[in-house]
Image (tube, rainbow, N blue to C red; front, side):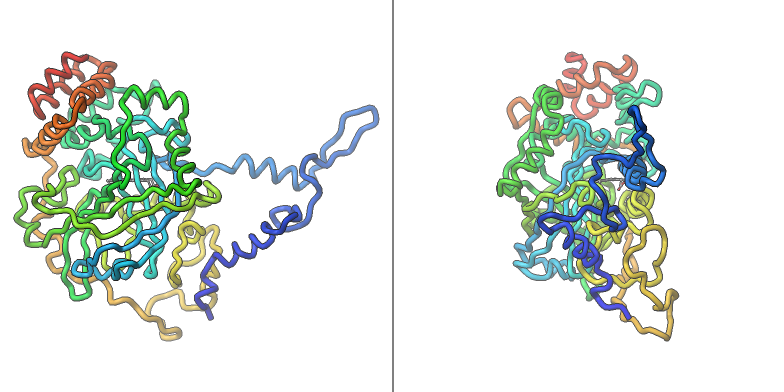
Length: 501
Ligand code: HEM
């Protein structure tokens, strides 16, 4: 018989921490057997000096063998990050849009874990470099985990998921030289120009944030907020920093990357440690299915935003980071986030990128952390788990459901079930018919962003110099095509970049 407690891995960890917490813990092997001081190996001293080690020295062998295995694969993207814990609080009623329990009441608070990353560079690399920042958040709600896996720009580079590995490879290292390569970077974007809007964001000074406390985060995708009565709205979610956007210039970001490659990690850690808790306001934009069918942009196209004048921002929550990880590896490196982790009341839309991501993240976690990654304390929900059709596998430490039926429809032990996803006959709608061709439409929002940069002193100049600084090492034929691409945003912009090269 399994009760709520037997599925809570915290109990095992409480047992372990009782030992840790005593003032002078008794040192043991990992099996719990008391051991001698680990500062020296067992050896037989030979007369006249020298010593022979013994194969029976389990402690020595374990220390060496475990050390050689203490790295796990790093994330193929978003490898380098900072992390924190915090609290999400509902500030405005949105029960007209969703029946999600954690959003059901103003004042309701939900604890979360968050990981903010750069995308392209490897684990531990300089964190002020020009890049998108990822924002992965696991809210531990009463109805299971809700993951929000966002970026700090509102759009993405591509809208067909088959291009995702390509865009990332072009931003990483060249397969031959093992160097970042501006030719392949721009060659990819010149030939996949639906990325223009995201490029405009990346090469503005927002590509080099001055701290992780001064960035916004965006869901990017269209999600569905659903209600038990079968109705739904499309939503886009945005988190806006309460401390204002602050960016480095390209020159500052480059200098700091050399002086302190961990600038952003350190800034976040130290501010949380001294009680200066960063906070964000959560907003959403909502759209009815009928509006979606006739809207001028395809709402499942991740390269487009919904202009605020058409769909105003509606506040609904407050996010505060209030605690640092106790152990980076256990809390943050072993964390796994996925857009597929959703509570009742939040559902995917027909956005093809979102659909692909819902496969890709759990797949990555199974590879990176093992098939039972959801049982790791940092990933484990605070609500009870009962999933007896999913058992066994490496590193299973959650009771494993004993004799309970491991097949569906058993009459031996009854279960209750959620009502199931609301059935939406036309859940995809006509808006899901989809074309990846690049047209002039793809440049409209990029041109609008160029105009916005023109309203902020120095921002257009910085943009030109940021692009030119990156592009100047590309081969001439790629440079020419990139200039053509930016001329489609604004003819003057193309000329300015050509002049700055
Ligand atoms: C088809 C498109 C995409 C695919 C296939 C994809 C795939 C992946 C994979 C495989 C990882 C590594 C996961 C791990 O090892 O645990 C990852 C990380 C991440 N991705 Fe994506 N991604 C896509 C698009 C996006 C978009 C559009 C966003 C934001 C709106 C995003 C945000 C993130 C973040 C924040 C992480 C880091 C998660 C963490 O901290 O563990 N990705 N992505």
